[in-house]
Amino acid sequence: MAGSAIEIKGLRKTYAGTRHAPPKEALKGLDLDIPEGSIFGLLGPNGAGKSTTINILAGLVRKSAGQVKIWGFDQDENPRQSRAAIGVMPQEINMDPFFKPRDLLELQAGLYGVPKAERWTDEILELVGLSDKAETYARSLSGGMKRRLLLAKALVHRPRILVLDEPTAGVDIELRSMLWRNVRKLNEQGMTIILTTHYLEEAQEMCDEIAIINHGDLIIRDRTEALLAQMDAKTMLITPMGDAPDITLPQGVQLTRREDGLLAFDYNRHKTSANAILDAVRAAHIDIADVKTTEADLEDVFLSLTSGR
Ligand SMILES: Nc1ncnc2c1ncn2[C@@H]1O[C@H](COP(=O)(O)OP(=O)(O)OP(=O)(O)O)[C@@H](O)[C@H]1O
Image (cartoon, rainbow, N blue to C red; front, top):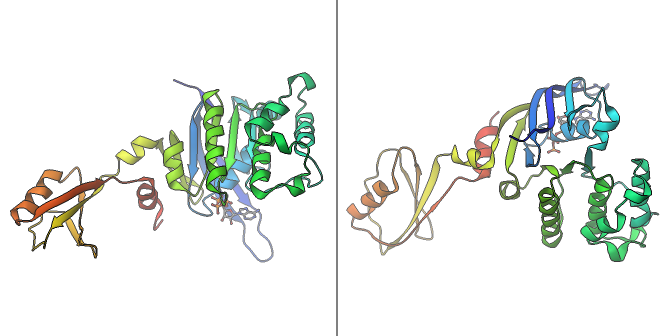
């Protein structure tokens, strides 16, 4: 079994209160293990504590209690090594507008103490598609290009672990697919990827494993397929030929007659078979023009685990 890229134990963060707001307990003893080599999704509703977790990993926020190990290095005992093992692409664009991409990457590499001979500035620029903008002032890059530069900055010290905080929020389709191509490529080369996203479809497609947090606690963590498999809800959509009279439904099945004439049967696949529904439809003398079923997706899992909590 692969080792852990990140080990988080009993992680707590309470933000100090102000005159106008009481202290805020953003993380309440989070335990989380992120396996080496994975593409790991950290999901949760607004305010769940995702950014707090990532900012603690990045060394930008001080934890209140708990232990964080990055690539086996305890953040408190080995701050330098643990910082060197991780690269973070932040959510917000924060760069000096009067620098050019190549200079900015060289500067960043210098900050991490990467010797000149080990730098890979040109390769990174190529990877993120900014080679032809290497000598352009950052202030005149488009928003999408600035985000690519943020990714480039996170890579200068060849981190073992790359953290992407909402990497595709508000970016166009082209940039999004470029980003995911790069992320896959880096992952294939052995980099562990941790990402947060509000696009659940994207998480479902990209991540091997997913953790959902809410109110500063871990709710669930599992392989993406296992999370999806635990959802039993399915819908069968039947297009009838002609009118569809009353149907005697198997127990536990719910029928919605859609405006477009489709019959939508919601059922639980562990309790009802697809055949039982088809039999009921045939017994009502309905000829079937078309049938399809839809599986639960990550959005269903997410909502069932986080809504109302
Ligand atoms: N600097 C701060 N001072 C006080 N409270 C904060 C601070 N930063 C975050 N919080 C609070 O801590 C909680 C967790 O916030 P956090 O930003 O980690 O959530 P999140 O899961 O990243 O949310 P989002 O999806 O909206 O980015 C929220 O209630 C937030 O208001």
